[in-house]
Length: 287
Image 1 (tube, one colour):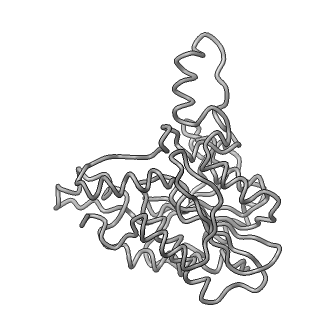
Image 2 (cartoon, rainbow, N blue to C red):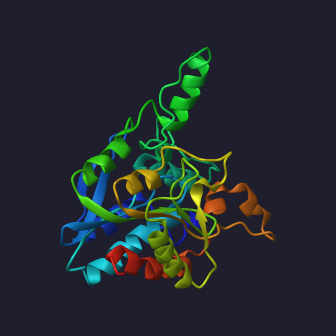
């Protein structure tokens, strides 16, 4: 499992989350427990989501790092909710792959659904017409039959229901980008200028260059069903962070055929620490 040195496998994730007082919020397709960490107090809520795509382990590390930093000095005027791993089945599968030396690319949950296409706004929805049969099967496999059709995303929806979420960060990999809504349409979100200022502050605090991009800027690629758009629709200032630049090395051909290394740097510590430092003020609700 040397390829994952410096990362938290499922047992380590569970131990770190438990040490922070994590509580169950639901179960996965295969019955694994999803947990959330709650830090601070107050009506306003910041939400941090990690591990929605199982191979993107660096995002999980950033989520846990943020939780540990915030727990050391909890915010007095807001509550921070952190779900370190949404796709717990996929995370466990990647861990097994690494242990066995298997080179597997995993993006979906155990029903073959990309959980970051299973949220409501712009969801592919029902397919009708002459191609309904084969096309509907393809759409369902990618986005799920309907929003919240998967237990993992439904657990997140239940966690958030009725709460005043006004800040949100979704942690992915890779590309060193900060993506802003909307994703499913060409327009920017109603609070774009305010959000852009926060994104620029995050980027300025990072030693490596992170590009800030409007996700729906390309007419031919406007993905629907993203957590980014759903959180924005709730009124939150939401950003999606593509953490790091992956671990491909031109002079090490072995990294070319290891999907885990496409997304995750060999030594994540420096990048994780920098992202935790840069994102903490935003998550704390600072202006």
